[in-house]
Length: 74
Image 1 (cartoon, rainbow, N blue to C red):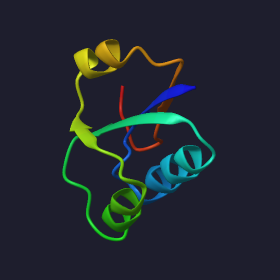
Image 2 (cartoon, one colour):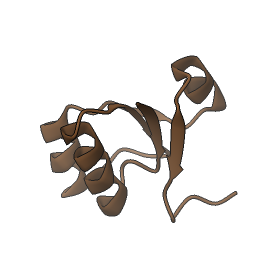
Image 3 (cartoon, rainbow, N blue to C red):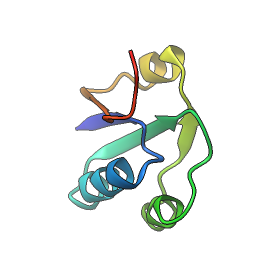
Image 4 (cartoon, rainbow, N blue to C red):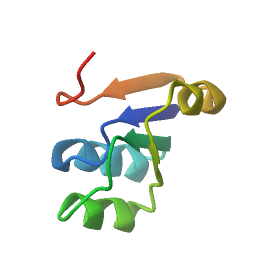
């Protein structure tokens, strides 16, 4: 399954992304800033690229699901 994780740079969502990738999903992540430790360590270990948030990044990836972190505002 192709999944886009919005807010992937946060500690909770980086862990969710790591677990999803570990069980075999194809992931893409986005966030408004550069992830910092410990989230950056988790993302580096899972080799997940974090892109700046953009609707176009989601559309071009064409995911089956989009997971939105709790810290993301409408």
